[in-house]
Length: 256
Image: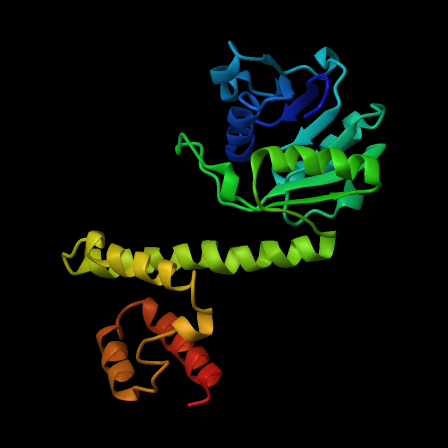
């Protein structure tokens, strides 16, 4: 716990910024003193709890600037803050720390998928990956991260990029597969609810088994007859090639 509140200014009004703001506002020892966004409407929900601004000339002195912005905006926006002697961090998985155009640089990356529409999110089990140029700044980030989460790790920019890529495979690509499944069910007058218990079982299984151990299905067991029946069913569908390609990958990986 710090002797006096550590002042945080948050930049952004999107998914990550919204959830960080909600948590910072209730965090002992820290004060979210301002949120900046070029559109005040995106941060208006916080106007009665902290300062909201759309003009950088209204920035107050702070201990930490957090850029919770889209990846393609982070670097050019950071140039606007180059004259501030404030630890400035971004929340991106793919942008190197060194790309920031500020005096003091760091990264504060909560490794989770965020949606504004989900009102609450338990940060205590969300891994927070941090990086800084020196021990003083790293300690500041470590204390903040540990105030939010039980899972805090120091990683370099290359490691963070690897984690981000892994997340794309495990979350974004998997969710795209859910979309394919939903469309197949819908096209055959079936509800997506039918497959939800299966999705949950697979997600729970990989908590105790490796993905390799958890893999099942016709491709994993070399059941070419079933695969061919499925391909026959999909022969007029744009999903035919996707099913065939993924099945071939699994077959090759299992060395059947």
